[in-house]
Each structure stands twice: as C-alpha cells, then as structure tokens.
Amino acid sequence: MTAATTTPDRDLVRSYASEGSETAFRALVGRHVGLVFATALRQVGDTGLAEEITQNVFVHLARKAPSLAGHETIAGWLHRSAILESKARFRSEVRRRRREEVAAAFAEIPAGCRVKCCPYRTNWPAHVLAWTPNAKTSRERRPIAIPLS
Image (cartoon, rainbow, N blue to C red; front, top):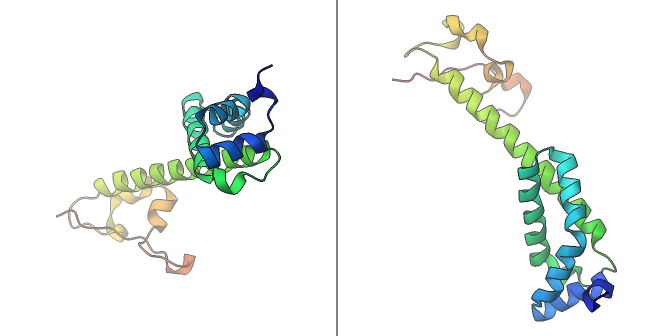
C-alpha cells in the first residue's frame, strides 16, 4: 500500500485545500470515483451522463475542499453531491424537453389563430394548453397562442 491509500480523507482534503496538492486530489478521486459514478449511474441510467455528473461532483469537491477539510471521510458528502447533481441534471433535461414541446406546438399554429378556435389544439399536450408566462397559480393558467406573423 502506498501512503496515499492509507492516508485518511481528512488529511488528503486538507493537503489539497492548503497546498493545492495534485497527488492528494488524485488519491481522493481514485478512492471515491467508483462510488460517485455508481451513484450517478443508478440515478440517471445513462453511462455518458453519469460520467459527466461524476466529473462535476469532483469539480465541486475541488472548489469546496477548504470547507471540507475537517471531515473525517468525504464519502457521504460525495454520495449526496452525486445524488443532488443527478437530480439537477434530470430536472434540467425535463425542462428542456418541455420547452421543446411547447415550441413545437406553437410552431404548428397558423398565423393569427387563437387557441379557442384552433383545430390543432386537440393534439397538444396538457401542459402546453395550460402554459402561460409568469403564471403564479393554476387558476391563472389559461391557454394562449402567439401569432407567428
């Protein structure tokens, strides 16, 4: 065993935070990359996305190292960070898809058409019909159509 594999996480994080030791950070990554990747993969189910999440978690660790220097082990923090990053990525993907659906639905509206008279509105998803900009409550959400001309 090398010194890096027997050194506690606390000392490695402290060494990286105070001295910028690449060896210490490399040891932390080598020790915990499997945990972070497996957690991300279980959350998102996509290998490529899990790799991106893993990289983001370790970038976050590099930034937060000074505040984590007192922790005995960082495995719990890394696990939680991987879950939070996975959820954030999933939410952003859902929002992106929803925006694309709304844009595609509005692109089908003939120029000058309003939702109440539009024969195409029966094919639209429910969230498209309910969407309004800056709606605060469900009572305020009414279908609208934006003229394309």
